[in-house]
Image (cartoon, rainbow, N blue to C red; front, side, top):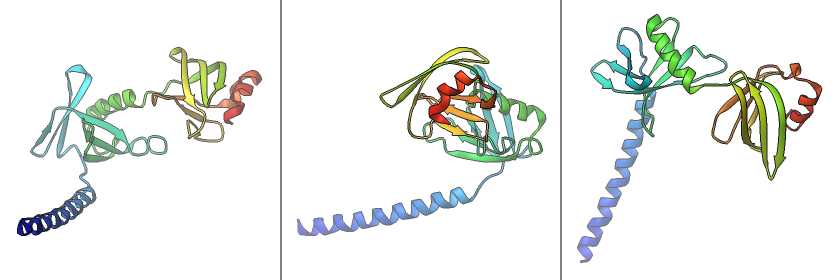
Length: 194
């Protein structure tokens, strides 16, 4: 029995080394950024409003499109990822304007519009806060809307001196492009967050 036991110990030791190797491999993968261009990749619209990608000898039936810098540099460093929970990166488009065709850029913009859909708040009807939540009742450029945010924890972010981004409990984003244009009574309601 004793013999078996020590053997088990060795095996576990081996496992740990293997994990370290695996981590190093993953790090290498990460450093080995693959740039996607019109020369090595082909994007296509698919059924259900999705997008497929053929890159070198790989084919992805559906990919997800993320901006690395959604606000400061929305055209640059577009990350193309697998469409699953892990969302592993397949590659990066360095610049949408120059590295892919106009048609491809159009397809990817569509996907990003869906992902980064941000209604603009035009009028604040009421903001009620209780128990650490704030309940917004607003009118956006897409119609009337109610949503709830956490009072703490960066739900309201100043993107500039006058531009606010508000993220609700479900991760939906709303924007106030210039809060100085709101009425006095609307600003009073926003006081908590300014």
